[in-house]
Structure formats: C-alpha cells, structure tokens
Length: 127
Image (cartoon, rainbow, N blue to C red):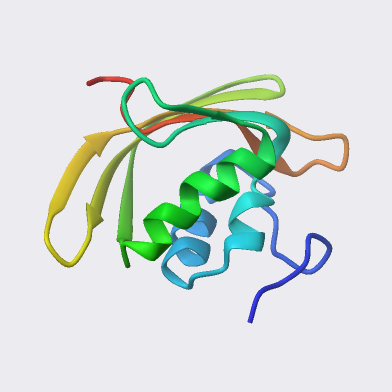
C-alpha cells in the first residue's frame, strides 16, 4: 500500500530524512519516497546519471525497486545553516547479487510548512 503526498510522514528535521528514505525505500513505497524530494530536485541514480524532478526521480528509483534492492543509511555528518542542510551518509545498497557501499551527499531545504525535503541527492558524489 502506498500513501499519497498528504498521508506520508514528513521530516520535521533534516536528520529525519535518512530514516524516512530508508523506511519508504525498503517498504517499497515509491510515492512516499518521491514525496521526500522538492518538485525540481536533482537525484543521481549512478555516477553522472542525473534525474531532475519527481517524475524522473521516480523512474530512477523504480529501477532500484525492480532490482529488489534494500538500503541502509548511517549518518556521517550534517551541517545546517538557516533553511539549508548538507547531509552525508554511509549508504549500503544490497541487491540479490551485489552489495555496494557509498558515501552520499545530500542537500535539503526547509519548506514553508517547516518540513524538510531533498533538493539534491547524490549517492555517488565522492566517486
């Protein structure tokens, strides 16, 4: 079962984004997962493979779902200045045939309603 944009839990602090991302990703809830991104956000599905906007991000994440991937995120660092946060996580992505570990770089922005959404999500920034 997926939740629509109004039903999904939102991050009220930038450090909650990784927890929600993991829960929605591993739970297979693409709608809730994509709702963690601003409408024109940028996501990198692979090194040098940008997806811009929620529709393209959904396509990229669907590929990962189809590969039956699971993800574990461990926060490394977070820096907040006003309404902008830079976040870095250790990400472990496991599929039926492989496990990959990367260091992510994300930028999040506080929204008018006080919640936080991803503006940029690049799991391969350090690659």
